[in-house]
Length: 604
Image 1 (cartoon, rainbow, N blue to C red):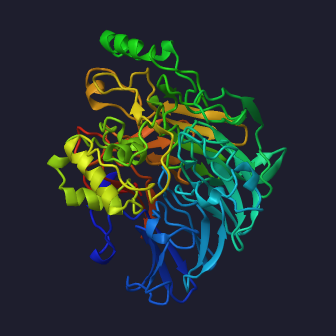
Image 2 (cartoon, rainbow, N blue to C red):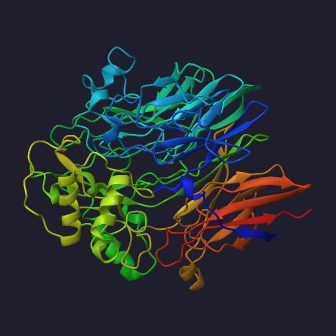
């Protein structure tokens, strides 16, 4: 196959924002069509023939998603990271929200595609008297936040059921102010798409303290059970597990056991006593990092990894963070499976999912100051991603140590206030608070200015997360033994693996003879009727690959201009099949990034 075209483009100036649009939804009544696009906190309805906003939709062509959440819209941060899903004449949306408090509740909402009026809302943090409210402190919906759907949804249009995976509640890593199981955070919801009524649910993580949100939309599939066909829904996870349920009643199609896990040693924290564990299929990522799994890339790298490992706690899944040691999370905070999602072969019932096998570390520290100085505000709101020491975890979470060399004070204020890229907005900061944070970021020291009153945006947590840290050796490679990324084919009829292979390489290591290691990867696969699995995803080698869907044999590969951290799309024009991938890079600090779509034509 040869690339037939490459091109770059963007939304028109009228719809540019600080956060990129994450896909589009389309609706038509057979006479005219509408494109529904999320930009920042707004959902637009565009005339499909002209691209112009439709004035009768919402307010002058758009809905402000900060409204209808029971909070002051001026202090709420929400943005669409998936395009929403259309069912008949409604569009159903979730949204990305802050992972620290304050954060709005992650209500699932359906809007009329013609008028933009709210049709229904499902409260993921239940209101008093609603199902699940007893799993939260009293009136938690008024002060807790998130439990939101950022990953996207799936809809069974024939049955009118929408399947909604939700994320963790804020704050991600300490839950002393949300003691209980916290329904419907970390839950696969089955809702009546017409009314929003809950039909069934499954909570995969109770009282989440590990940011183990569902990372992608579920996949609808039909499997065989006892000689008959069963319509099912499959959900992949960051833990490396696949859950499979009867699509109608939510009955698990493979056994799920509830295991006891350690209690927290952090004062005020109350962990859930048990967590669910699927008995089948086997995990597609290793589950606990042990000493014998450390890197042997070089003797020096192994010695470093061994010394570092002995300073960490590593005991597998659902080990709560502590105040005295950093805790290993493996698979890491990014999974396991991630937002690219799986592909399912309708003919065979085989699910294809790519996975990371990276170890990360994290922990908690106590917030000492009750004053709203710049450093206190930074530690409370920003250190979650950028770390206590502001070094971040590039490129996903950039270092802020020398931000004054690349950004002015006003530019920093704008980014904090409005958000940019992966970073959410913080509209709840007062001008004085914003000035304090900016001063701290630019000067690297605190203003020591005590601001009056409690923070208008919400309460300060007792503890803060020390930051996301990949367990990398001094040369920047994973400090564990390969594989560092895999592609897996799982037969959902039997729960057995059809095949499993490493996915990706590091070019420098491959040139020295260390090949087939797998690498960190983001973006999912697509499976074709012709028997191929296409996937890009790998961060470092910038390859697009085609595998035999039955055996996993590599049949073709091509180098892309930038890494293709996206899911390919396949389509047909004039009897010719094409595969297109969005390439952008940005996850390898040593490689350039850009924005190019590359389309390949399949042989006739």
